[in-house]
Image (tube, rainbow, N blue to C red; front, side):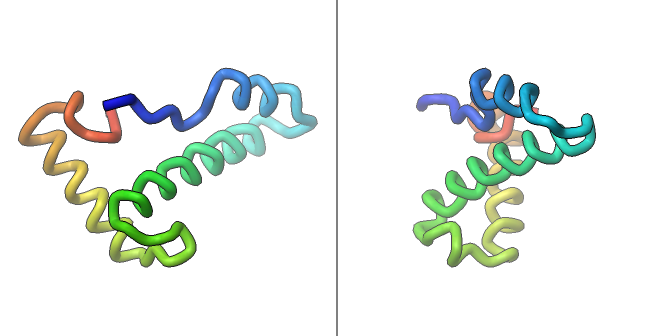
Length: 80
């Protein structure tokens, strides 16, 4: 499986160039990465991002965590 890329080097460079404070840059990177993750979750659950419920997000994180614990970080989406 192709590893998801939550923030490309080009996007990170664009954030660096933006006239933002350091906390704003951090939040911008987090928001872009979060959007990518929400898109992955929505695809996995079979709904649009707009239709995702908070419970579906929680359930997905539980599932990904279980995969990581049982099969290792390489098998899960999130690699932390």
